[in-house]
Image 1 (tube, rainbow, N blue to C red):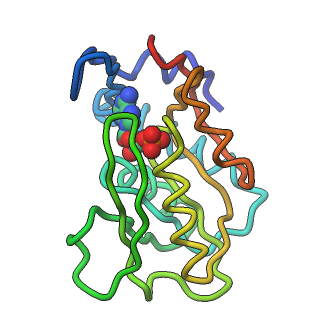
Image 2 (tube, rainbow, N blue to C red):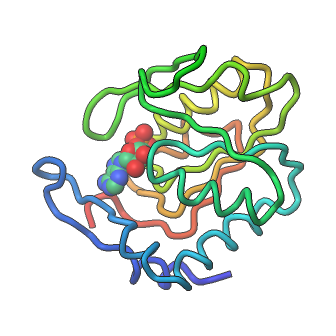
Length: 179
Ligand code: AMP
């Protein structure tokens, strides 16, 4: 398991993106580093070793990278949570608020079977709205949230983790929101 500082060093901070006042945590610098990518995938997968997982759900779009790596490592399949209108078959939708706006995500209704234990993965936890919406989608479709995992957790005033009290939440590095 790598120390949080290891990930902190590999993540690029982009001030005022996509709008003024937001410190954007850019994981492209982490995933272009072969060891960085491998360690992030391994550390997330290892954090949920004790949990039974049937499927790994990736949240569009940076969540796709890590969810696919984890799924390959644990021998499971990936399901996609995408922005509205992107998935071609019948979907279920959930709305959420972002640190910088409002959005919704969709999952194919046949992506999850009753009782499936689903590990929910994204790059970053900010307010927790996205993860909560994804968790609600899993549950709406009869699945069980096996855990929530991300590389970065923004701590401080956003209280993202508080929204996700019902779930096991793992982050590899915790960064105060305005740093
Ligand atoms: P939230 O729903 O507020 O927890 O926001 C999490 C989602 O928004 C994730 O998909 C992130 O990729 C994205 N996001 C929110 N804030 C940031 C940030 N400061 N830097 C990078 N991505 C962010």
